[in-house]
Length: 305
Image (cartoon, rainbow, N blue to C red; front, top):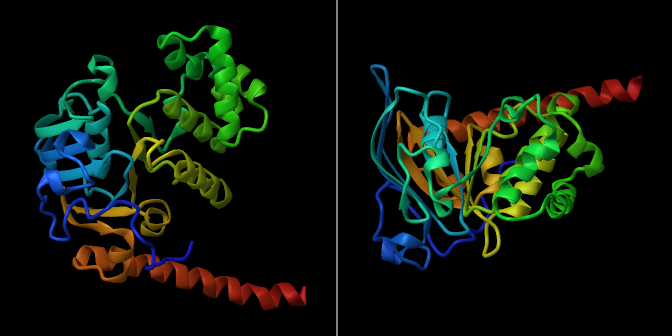
């Protein structure tokens, strides 16, 4: 996936400046503070004697798509867990996390009002689904809770599964998760998150365990089903800057528990201001160059075969 520096941002302006400071909320994304799909202020997370997240500020307007980028250990997955309401037991927190204008920090999903719940897609789809319950029964639950009949929910789910690239929805709905491939399970998880009809979707490294072809398909689905006026906002957690730039309009770079740089994807790729960002981009371009060199070296050998 080639790195590009010519993408134009979808949103009206930078959500958080390149220095990492918040602008006046009333001037961001054409709305005020409560218009944000996600507003994080001074988030601190402590696990045992370690503070992996140390005063994080982040904002995503309604319909925005933001990639939170960082190396392993930077605190990005714990940030996603705080937003989704699934921090590990015993974690200490400080600051504020507001979803749809509602404070949710330290409130598990089940205790949140409907307007403050998020859809979550995780890296390991096998752990996200109950292996003892059929896919259909699991994915129907959010629809039935909102008043659909079982038959109506099944019909709606068949259409949703088809929309995320499942070719045989009836068979998938009748199957247990263990009978599905990793790519199929990930698409089911995406369908489940979308079925919740939330204003914010959190995707935590959702393509890392997938092959390249399936990864591209899942990214296309996320691009098609999030953002804009109709889809939910997206917080996309990744360590891969090429994937971040291909999917999201804004990139926030995290290091040592804080955001060190944020801006439109094109600006971040074209003129990275922080040393951490420059290292991430340099590493991605080195990998891309080595891959192209390997392909070029293999082509003559293939021609001689």
